[in-house]
Length: 209
Image 1: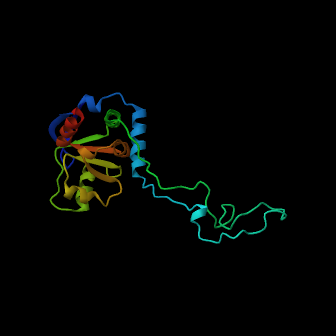
Image 2: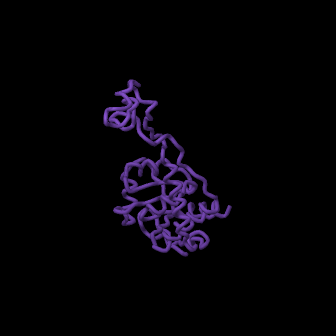
Image 3: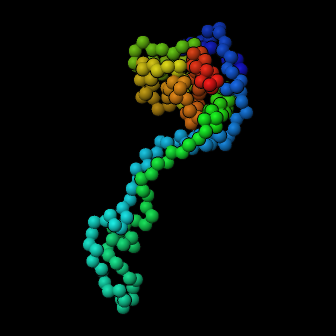
C-alpha cells in the first residue's frame, strides 16, 4: 500500500512510502484483537480491591441472644455478614489480573489492528515531527494542518521525543508513543494513526524479528 508523505504543515512533500503488506495488509483476526485488548486492559488493573471478612471486623464477639427460643435465626455475634456493619460474604480480595499471551498472537493482533486502519484510510504518514519548544499550540497546529483536530490521534515516533510528547500531554484526544510501545488497544482507540517515515521502518524491523 502506497501512501503520500506529508509535512507538519499538512502539505504533500512529493515523496511516497510503501506500507508493507505483511503488516498493514493482513487478513484481520478479530479474536486475536479481542485477546490482546483484554490483556492490555487487565494489565491496567491494580487489583488492590479489598473488603473485610468477619474475622477482620472490629467489634464484640458476644453472642447476641440465646441459641433457641427467640423465634428468630441463631446469631453468633454482631460481626455476622447478616448484620449491618458485619463482614462481607465472598468479598473482593487483592489479586493479579494479568495473564499470558503468546508473542505470535500479540503480533497478529497488532498487525490486524494496523490493517484495519489501512483499509479505512485512517493512516497519515509524515516526513518528520519535531518541535523546537514544548508548547501545546505546536501540536494543535499540527492536527489543525491535517484537518483532524476533532479526532482522536495516535502519533507513533521512531524514538522518544520529549518536546513532542510534552506538547501533546494536555490534549485529551492526542497520544504520542514510540514504535516500541505500539499496542493493539491504542491503535483501535485512535481515529487517525499518524506515522513518520522513520517509524514505518522501525515497525517493519520490529515485526520482522
